[in-house]
Image (cartoon, rainbow, N blue to C red; front, side):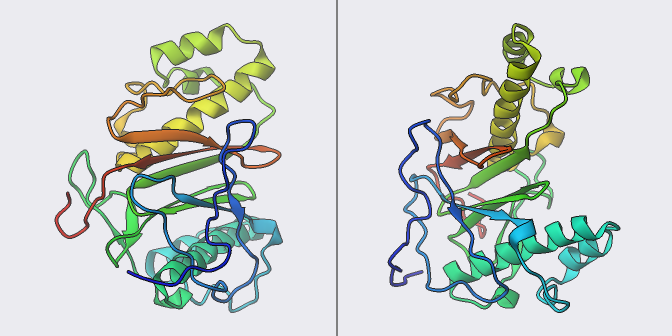
Length: 262
């Protein structure tokens, strides 16, 4: 795909002084995004966008572009706030992908790639048009997106005032559990969220997901991710999700083609 770049084409600025990648705010609205962004080259960090669902106005007909699985899932939300957050997040995705692909939001077709672990039809979602990859994560009011030319995964988690649950802690890598055990409760919560978002982003990126286990991959609880992720060719970076959030992104330097699964 080729397209002319728009003036502010790079949603990810240089890493902040804290070492975090900074996503670009996704403009509010229901129609197409202005201009047409250009995805970064393979191997470069994906472009990141952040949406706060409560700031996204929705009209009665806003959910019209949502069909099939999206519409069915939206209908299952009982609480209006939860339905609003889901709708805003999915509409944001369609507006974003439509901008990259040169399509209207309701023209974007999504498919499922094969699972990289079991080969089943439950792998990472992708546009039906080859060559573009995305990942989406929602937590409370936050919605984080990543778009790139190679497989990518993101995760965002709203901060919680509660301590780390032992059952969840036990899911981590033994070294990560040991790192958490020496911390005070407040520091332990922050360290756990750093670790958890890295793990979710990485597993989503490789197309495996949490169902295939998370204790076998070490991604650390410290201020920075490990310089060498579990799989060769992958990079994991922390993301600035703003006040009240933690986030991470994982991306591959190797393209993945939907047509042949390679």
